[in-house]
Length: 312
Ligand SMILES: Cc1cc2nc3c(=O)[nH]c(=O)nc-3n(C[C@H](O)[C@H](O)[C@H](O)COP(=O)(O)O)c2cc1C
Image (tube, rainbow, N blue to C red; front, side):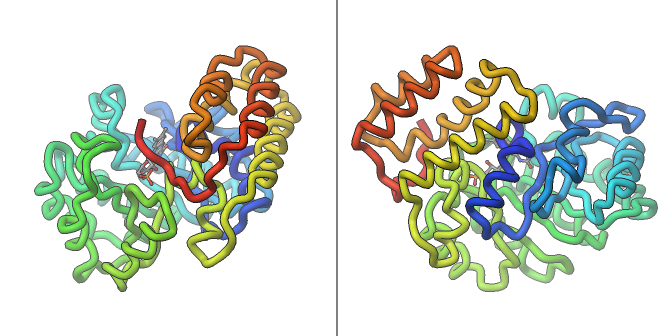
């Protein structure tokens, strides 16, 4: 998740809460010549991802930059790359990237044809069900079925639904009928019960991708596999370890505090009766203020490991 799952996050999460089969990078948007550097490049360097099974994800509107970036990833040792056909942001879709690719299935088809004829890596796709409507999915699915995708992850909403509309399980179900590739479900899986319900409803599902639910509760993968709920001390250790990893990576203290605060948008749900203490965390401007506010929150007595993520 862009702005959330930096390499430090993935490393600490994989170490403390093993159980995810793989992690995906936030999307990498190469320039038109296929180049990417800076933070996106650092994010895929193998030395920054020790102990993490990682699939890099690319956001493009043409095969050319995808293929050049894929070669760079291949040279780094990756064997698979994911294409983002889901990002709903207006600045992305207006460039025909992310969910913007769903508006023109013929152009998507041409792009995939070129990618699959020349890509040195296995290619998976993360898609939404459509741009304006989930009814568009049958045409989009027909395109995907022409290619040997290593996996298709379906965020079961159209772009118009952003992150709020109710996932369309009927439309999603069509992806499971006769698809030649493994299909993964994504969307609003916030509790082990949600994950179990989806697995029961769709027995031939290959897997589930967790997003906001796992940021809210880093132990969600463990709980989904029958393990114990998150303990408060464990969460505290996770957050402090992550803070230290960011500082050790050279990130300035104020930026480290800002990154940690991004997580609290999701994790605040674990402290349902401590709204004032949570607000103090968001108000903190420096790392010492942030740490003091988190200490006060943990001392507040409000912690519900099973609360699950809820939209504000
Ligand atoms: C802040 C944020 C950043 C995201 N960044 C990405 C991304 O870079 N690539 C991607 O495929 N999906 C991204 N997503 C979408 C999630 O992967 C997921 O598809 C979506 O949140 C629905 O799943 P959930 O209900 O389990 O969160 C992002 C979502 C959020 C909220």
